[in-house]
Picture 1 (cartoon, rainbow over the protein chains, first blue to last red):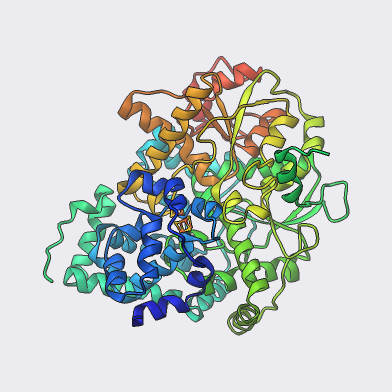
Picture 2 (cartoon, rainbow over the protein chains, first blue to last red):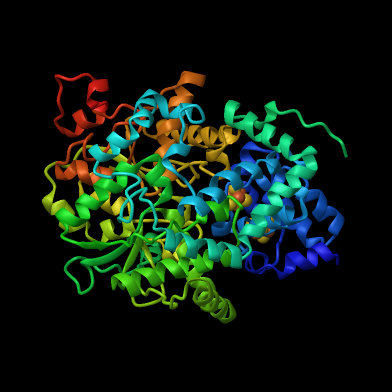
Length: 235
Length: 348
Ligand code: SF4
Ligand code: SF4
């Protein structure tokens, strides 16, 4: 039994997600991510149950843990009451804490998750903001969306859901600073800030410098596809 | 007496949500959704109008309520501890500042997240203690747990509130779905994480079907009805991953159209499903040249249409990939035919 497995075992999400796996494969049969990717929740459950750190590290460095769409279809159907989606959450936190996420293409997308969901929360108190849904990144929303995006302030007035009003209830309002301070204090005290910081630090280590991290980020902002940034494998 | 399987499942998964005719059913605290507010704000707009104007509710939300942060939880930027304390803060603000006891959220991920935190507090007393202590230390606020459904620790979803009041809503309807085939698509985070907290359970969820039936629709079934829309947090948010979302939508729509080519109405209760089940039909049309033309409406948008609200100005059917006019024609809902589709959608 390895050190990493011990850490995993301490995680309440692991404890609630793993009873005993009978290897029946029902989770994989219902899993939408397994249908479209090289991914199997059953395999994940087997790997962690091996309690073998080397196998777990290999998993944490792979794309696999990032394919799960967090739909919890597996949870509903597992005859043993397991919850792969929760185990995945525990594994992802472990991968971020140890920097293993930087070794896979899907893992490195954690930089975007941190800079969008995480920083939005700390700046505005919402994980998503109206300005995030740019037509360039969401072409499937269509031409009406482009118009709407350009006119979002007027359109929201028109729909009676005005945005960015200060100190008012309502959609996309500005949350008062004293409440934002409380939220930031919670993120600090519960380790979320530390988790987010480890994303930046590990990416810097992987890509060589802060400057390269910004290049990687810019590539994604401009092209919507991080694969356009070429990873020089230095290690 | 022999009881149908469906009825047994239904009995097991009943939950009580107070209607406007019951004590406490008119005063609600609510949490807006960051997904809806960024990608489909009008759905909250119409929900508000219906709950306030048509059901006469007193809806309260504090300026200091934040988003539940669960997109960050499933998108891996926060911890379960973070989620517990953020949830406790929002509950505390609602109860101690606004004086509300009953709470619903507009987002199914918020609903699941708040439900998960309440379950954790019930099952792990030391986590409850941790939450109360950290909440006090970081914000000075007092811990409070809502007991919405049947007096047990719980919150509900906005669609539950619509379902509970469906007969009152149907009584006010100007239009009917008689002769219209329709199907539900329940958000995974509404039905699958805590099936016991879903109206009707996960096998026979009633929350949207009940609303559709109250408006007179004919419900159809199809093999991939419970398949996820593929929203996936990291999948829908990052363009390079959206093949997963598009593939899931394709699988669903293909399955529906094979079973019921004439079903063009899908009712949703999750922001992710509402946006992507529609939008990816546009992608599929472009990439594969296959058209499904299924109008994906949120429960509040559909209710708004039935009650006679304007499809565009009130119900916000402006930025959909699938044209909504054919469905409006089918139901018999009038709209300004002197304008082009574009003019109807672009008022400025
Ligand atoms: S459904 Fe449950 S028991 Fe079966 S393989 Fe998956 S996790 Fe194991
Ligand atoms: S939650 Fe993840 S592992 Fe489970 S069925 Fe959905 S995509 Fe698969």
